[in-house]
Length: 465
Image (tube, rainbow, N blue to C red):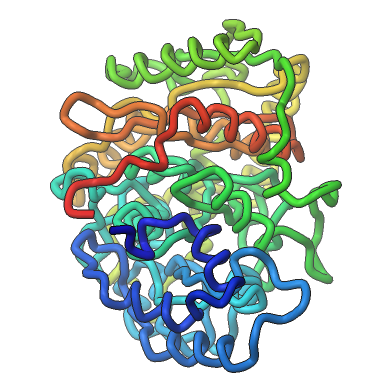
C-alpha cells in the first residue's frame, strides 16, 4: 500500500490540488514520522498545523504553484521570525529572530508549511553536520555515516521521508555534498538566481540557496518557488523564459559534455566507487547521444589558497554574541583567527584573484554545454571521521580531501547538480555532478531529467523507509 510519503512532492501537491488530501493531512502525516537521523534541530509542529489549517480554510488561490500545501522545513541558517534559529552554534542556542529571510518568506508565500528547522553545522562551514546544539545528522542509508553538510539535516529529512522536498544553501558544496551522501538530487543554482535578502551576508558571491529532492522535477519545482529577485538585490540572474519545472520536460538535444576526474585540490585519493560512478555516468551520457570529452581541470592549484582566504574571512564575519565566543567550536575559532588576520586590501585582492580564476575557467568551458565530475572523493564517511576538535587544521584538510570538486562551481557561479546515479555493493549512495554555463539551469535540468529517466533512482528507498 502506498503511503503519502512514498509519493513525490509534486504528486502530493497534485492530491492537494484535486482535493483528495488537505495541507493539514500532509502535515499531520509527516509529524507522525520519527526522526531517527538527526534531521531536525527545532521542530515546530503547532506552527505547521496553524499554517496548514489556514491554507485549508482559505482554499487554493488562483495561480498557486504545484507545491502549494506541501510541507517542507527550513535550514537552521535561515532566520525565521519567532522560531529558534541557532545557526548550528551553541553560541546562538537560544536565539529567536524577529524577522524572516527571503527563503522563509518565499516558502510561506508559496503555501508550504514548515515543520521546523533542519540541522546544520556551526555557521554552515563544515561539510559534515555535527553541531554542538544537536546530535550528528546521519544518512538514512547507514546511520553510522555522515549525511554530509552543511545542508545535512535537510538532505537527511528528505531521504528518510520526513519531508518531501527541502531548501538548502551552498557556499562550497553544501547542497551537493549531502545530496551525494543521502542519495538525492541536490541543485545549486546560478549566482544571483535566489535573493540573499535581507542580510546579503556573502560579499564574495560563493553562497546561494538551492534545493534538495528525491527527483529532478521536485528539485526544479522548489527552485521555481525560491527563484527571483527582491527590490534591493545588488545583482540577479536573468529571468528564465519558462518555469524550471517545464524545463524538465524538454529534450536537451545532442550536447557537448566536458568531463574530468582529477581533483581541483591536488594529492587527493579518489575512491574507486566514485570513479566508477563517474565512468558509468559518462557511458550513460554517451549512450543518450551526447559527445563526452576529457578536458583539463579548469581551475589551477593557485585557486585553492585564494578560496581558503575568502572562506576564512566569511567565517570571521559570523561572529558570536559578546561573551559567548568560548562556545564556538575549535574549527570555527581557528578559521575566524585566519580570517581576522587578513587585511582589507588582502581580502580585496583575494576576491579579485578569485574572479579572474573564475573568468579563465568559464572561458575554458564555454564551448561545452555541461561538465561532469564526481561529486565527492568517497562514499559517505563514518560520523566523526573528519571532525578533529584537537586539530582544526587537520579537520579542514580532511574536509578538502572529501570534497575536491564541489567548490569549483561556487567560484565560477555556474549552476551545478549532484545526481544519485550509483550505489555501492553495501548500499551507500554515490553521486555524480553536472554543471552548466551560468544562468542555464533550464538546460541542466533537462539533461538531469533525461539521465533520471534512464537511471530511475526515485524508486530506491533506504532501510526502514
